[in-house]
Length: 274
Image (cartoon, rainbow, N blue to C red; front, side, top):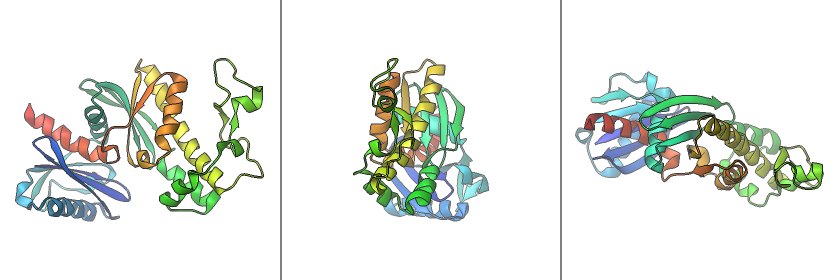
């Protein structure tokens, strides 16, 4: 058994990989990285009804992994670069060997995958943290469930300026429904639902367009999305619209929200198989 642990700023994911197959995934919250890692490991063990002696190695990744030593609770710890984890997970889970993998977390990381070559392409400070911050400032909401529930009844026409608003129809190949300016037409009738959807749209479109530019620079047609932001119901529809506009495909694989922990474990497993 290999346990992959992704230690983030607020949440820590852990996955148990047994003979290369995902057996269990858990998430815990703790501010201290060592406490978080130990808690995630214990939760995985308890979920599986296993014991610490069943774990061969821990594959640690994420911003908090630097705080871990060479062992945790007597189990050897292998550090895996976060971008390697992102690229490995995205490619393997989606079954695509040439793509831009987008990790949509608090911020956004773009990773280029071409076969066995994985490299950090770039990133953005726009991500889930942006969504939560803007929602707090504009809507006084800090619960992601409340925000996404509100957004279900939202109408972007009350907030965003479209190509059609400016030109009266499509222009230069752009459909009239394409966004010309996020928050560029906030009407007096705009309600909290409209604003919630517009915030999600702003964040997802910004990430989507950045990913498209990275894909185009590499002559790729596929973009794989992973990370906690993929759990928001509106994310896939918004990114599908960006993909249709630019002629690329966005893919959300199974277990996308826990992919970085999975990628760390997979990386160690594949290295051991060689």
